[in-house]
Image (tube, rainbow, N blue to C red; front, top):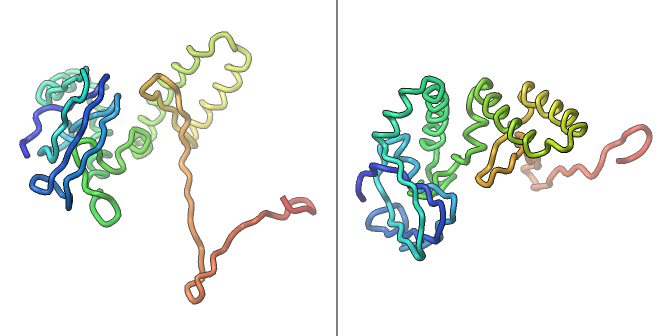
Length: 209
């Protein structure tokens, strides 16, 4: 593959991404759709990336190209943007470096495991999680201005949760605001017979709930 000099954002249209064993870590040729609002070769913005596949337009497409060199030059002129990009790229590189088999599939031009926007923000320090969440909260408030009484109470609770680190708020591709919480799940089983511990309820004030 060739060294990537830009990243591409698919604004509209249908594209097809193909990989071949001769140029990527796949056992057989593969093909998948590239949906709208998807980045192609985002990795080029954060690491020295070599293309491992080929994207072709199936219909008329609108694609935004972000030149890597121009991106760096623009970012360094804006101190606050530069700071958040350093935090984001540090977290992105950690995820990228650990995205290897057998736990994950190899990264490619349209997919890098563990690098969804919500995962990246959760990994950033509390200051930037809060700043990003507050921007999303302002967007949420603008969407529900007519519901003032409800908004004051609900937005206040969201602000408290963000400040306490219990959740983050993110603006998604279509402008919707999403509340994201970190949930930990675990499984307990007995090695000798593989019996699994399952909670069916709990005893609360004299009754099972």
